[in-house]
Image 1: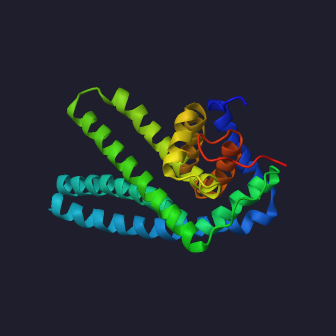
Image 2: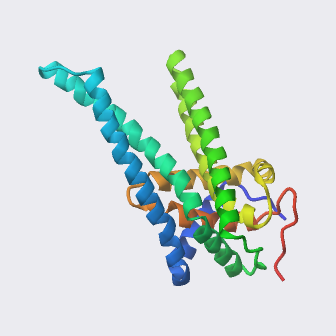
Image 3: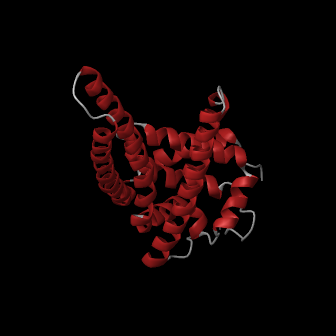
Length: 250
């Protein structure tokens, strides 16, 4: 079997979009992660903006045009950072909160591809698996972006190198999170999933870059979880796992 490459990963995400958009029976499952993402992300975002304004009061308080202009710029900068963090954390937490629905969507996509059904997991097991995976991915992403950001501050001109690496880290985070559903249902742990990603780097990066791009789009970004899980299932079933047998179509 030919290993999937970069463009195979890109195509898999868009194939997932097509599956969700044209399959009414999965629409209810697709709505649940969107509702979770809206609830968690908006709550964290509003809280972050409020804290940013309060922090600006202490950092750049005072009267006069210059002081007020400085206050606005500080509050705006902190608010943008807070909203970005809220979006990432909201996306991370929305996954375990809607893990059962996303597992069902992955099952539906696998069945549409004529694969034998994977073992059904309980809600508790599904939630725990998804939460552990999401926290591991988020922790690795925060460490990588913080380290790259520090390098960019210390070394002049390093942004030329660190900016693409930060984009790559975001793409890998998205791929890691979305592949949790087909990998988890197929019985692969986090180490086996990491080995799968290492064995198919081009497909992983291509898939993750499209997913990260979708996540940044206004409104459309809300659909990244259902679209991405369907696409991840297509990508995963296109190549054998590095360990743990995957059932073949009958």
